[in-house]
Length: 469
Ligand SMILES: Cc1cc2nc3c(=O)[nH]c(=O)nc-3n(C[C@H](O)[C@H](O)[C@H](O)COP(=O)(O)OP(=O)(O)OC[C@H]3O[C@@H](n4cnc5c(N)ncnc54)[C@H](O)[C@@H]3O)c2cc1C
Image 1 (cartoon, rainbow, N blue to C red):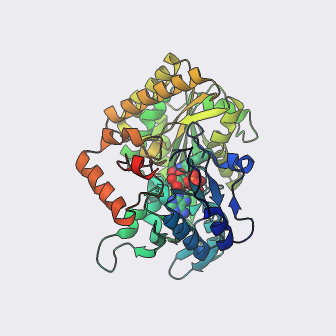
Image 2: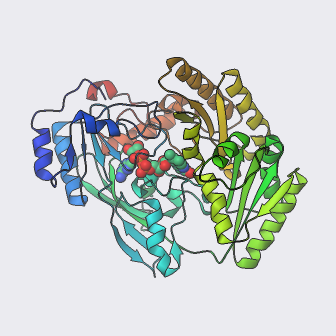
Image 3: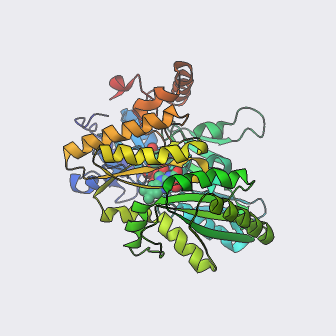
């Protein structure tokens, strides 16, 4: 989308007439807050941001944008890490005011929610029925279900439970011409169309409603922290736990740099600062099963050289461990104004070799690196710290990031584990997909959006970008 482009005359008055008062922002000072998501290296000022209050207003917005042939980008909470929710010169369609939980069906174990509902709010609403929504991105207190579905988000506990797509029963999309479409998982025959829309990153339309599956709250949950003097040993322990026949519900790694910054913050969990790496291991199920699994996992980490294993003896202690892990990203703000988060999924067996190589690459580019990630499913997040006001640092970050990405792909990994492609990785798509696969993806986009108005330039190398912007 071009930053020079002015919105067509008449569009803003038409949007204002269609929406409730205060739902259209077009002054530059306020739009600055919407020029990026959590990937701060990818920025662009939208021409306007609109905040529909419900599905009907959303449909009207999309129809008006389609008539005016103006590109648009859906935005939930803007916590995305791929530069996906950036609408340079176009219109940002923000779903934060569509935040109602429309139904919790305790018998059918589903909830029907609007796209702007915060992920954590779904479990909070279901708890009274002994139910919860399972996917838990580390950003779950802030991100929206619409964003989760658009990105097919993962999270620490997705190791055992599966990622967002495994928990979506049906959804409604507003197609880029304003047509509403309700799709399910192919249970009535036909293709799994909901599956096509999950992970489509806002390029096939705007998700207006989601029916998610709920699951019973686990009877038993057991957690420990294992401390290591070597990050490679921690990497080996990850594989060893699975070799012992245990599938933890969560298995996360945090390294020395991360421990130092978290311990200096309000989320300190009492971790020794001389620890090179710590694993958070959590098992759940029936109470006895969770305890047995955790015992086996403990044997495995000790066999790989863990110098200490600390059990959470209460829910409070367990939550303190998770606060330290989940708030690590925010705590990095103590070290540098910006973070470049890489996101690749690699075979677990490669972790012991890869982790020291990430450190070597960062040091060679004179950058600080902090690792905290979903080790159990090989979803690495090397976080490079920098200051985006320094162009030379940005160049070093981009160079180190590209090297890390190439290394991950070289060992059989993917270009994204959970954060999606967005604008950031679109240039890497041909590292993992051939032309036939890209053509099928383009054909799917064409089937919903012949105008190319929905989130152009993201996810797919867009052959029509020059014509539409
Ligand atoms: C501290 C931190 C921790 C994180 N941890 C995780 C993690 O553990 N796992 C993980 O997977 N991700 C994680 N993320 C990334 C991010 O939180 C997820 O990608 C999340 O799903 C984005 O949700 P959002 O509401 O912020 O979406 P946004 O950032 O607003 O948008 C993300 C993308 O989805 C599209 N989109 C948003 N809403 C809609 C809609 N209604 N219809 C169609 N498209 C839409 C946007 O166009 C954009 O392309 C983390 C981010 C941060 C900052």
